Amino acid sequence: MNQQTLKGNWNELKGKITEKWGNLTENDFQSAKGSTEQLVGMIQRKTGEAREAVQEYIDSLMSSDGLVANATETARQYANAAVETVQEKAGYVADQAKAGYEQTKDVVRQYPAESLAVSFGVGIITGVVAGLIMRSR
Image 1: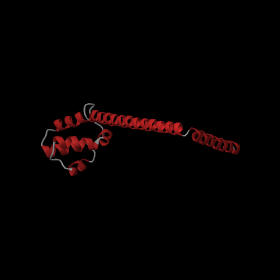
Image 2 (image 1 turned 30 degrees about the vertical axis):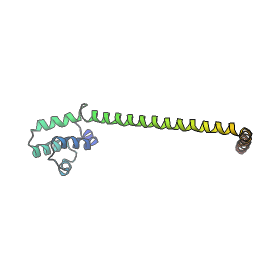
Image 3 (image 1 turned 135 degrees about the horizontal axis):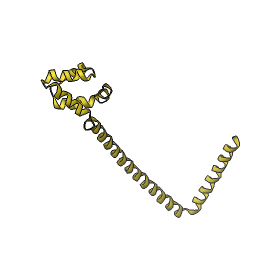
Image 4 (image 1 turned 180 degrees about the horizontal axis):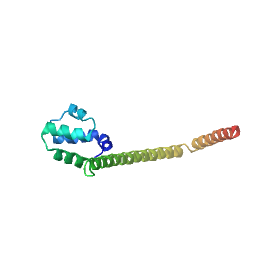
């Protein structure tokens, strides 16, 4: 296990180690200063475990079956939650657009002449604004 991997996964590693050896404190982890050797030595001293057993456990956490797999699963869960949220919001937007369309259709049916006049006026104003913009370039 290299120092970069240890530092990148430090909080998750601390949590897993604390689950296994609950008598470790935050000060114990701080004394390790992100060093694999110091971490293994500190755990060995505090727990009485064999150095090889501690090293194997930490290596297993850092392997593809350990923290990397947990990180992958966590990312997958966040992605799935994001997809569900986007689908939910997209459905809401589609429902609102449909409701707006139905409301507009009802207004046009109820007031056809006024709707035509408003549409004509908006078209004229849009054309004038577009013409002014094009002319200024």
